[in-house]
Length: 165
Image (cartoon, rainbow, N blue to C red; front, side, top):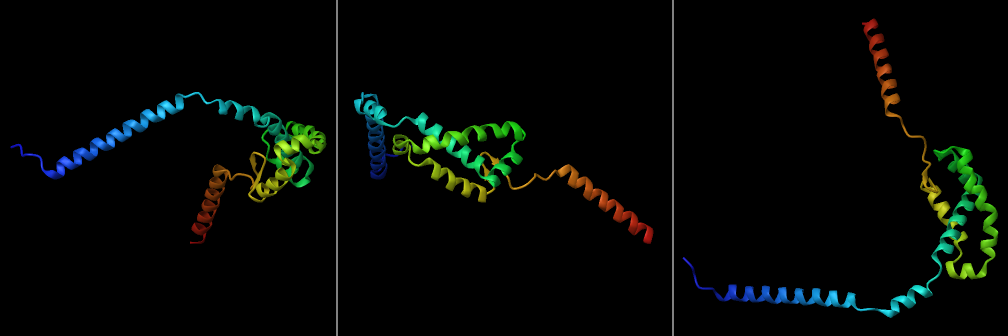
């Protein structure tokens, strides 16, 4: 049997209609505002610094910081899967490039002093067991060798106990 709508169901349907209407208006407003041409966006893009020169400066600062510190350098070379000769090349190439970048006043105003940042972050990362992209906490444990060694020890102890009894 159909019952006539109560005052509560009428109010809830009105609230649902209002909510749906507001949601529809917000979506239309969002679509219209994103489609409007914004010339200020173009001005903002031209006035920002050259990201490639800052990225280049940051890369050289990071590599030269690692390359010029004997502790960081040896940890990096030991952790590199490429071996020490190929891993040494970018470090050695970055060290002579850094002085010119640190003396470039315009670049330092644009990007900030990335050498100081690289030095501080290298200290923090080394404390956390990381040098550049490699973890240096130690050699990984090989489960197969450890388990085999443990099984051999258990077998030897079992044989010795069996002989004693």
